[in-house]
Image 1 (cartoon, one colour):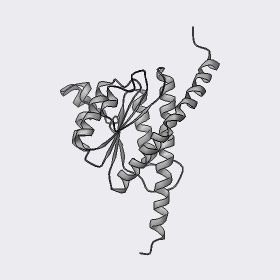
Image 2 (cartoon, rainbow, N blue to C red):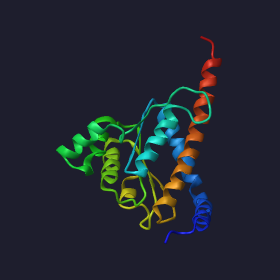
Image 3 (cartoon, rainbow, N blue to C red):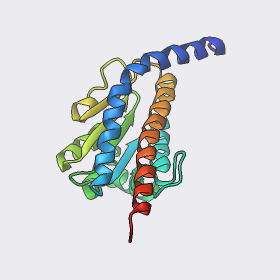
Image 4 (cartoon, helix red, strand yellow):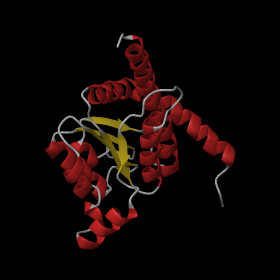
Length: 200
């Protein structure tokens, strides 16, 4: 028997309130990402399933726009190229599909964000480990009952939603990536305005 939709909505609202405790860390992530962009760095994102959709969503908000007209910001989701993903999965293993790409692309001063609702997805764990080894800033969006581990062991910043239900965690990840997009979007639009006001 399916769960009552009203109960699910109540669970969502209660979790949204508990997720408020992540706002200070989210603001630190936004500040770090702005620093990455100010230094001409890049953002790389990845995840599996619904988390892959979140990874693509965040990259899309930054390349396109969130609310304001502004320049495109460099962001790449490592889940979007089926040729590369299937090649790595076939020639190496599925656990390596993000790490290999990170090793090829990420550099010191970039940021890498991994999404995993459990914190245990082996390819996300390896991807974050490779990013840290490359000198990139690493960020984890996770949930579950293990404080985001083992993925959290390779993250400079962690946004761990205090829940175990995958659907509720993903709902909060979407909210958090929108809040992150808003912070970076506002900064980029302001700096674009300042550039336009400077004499040639």
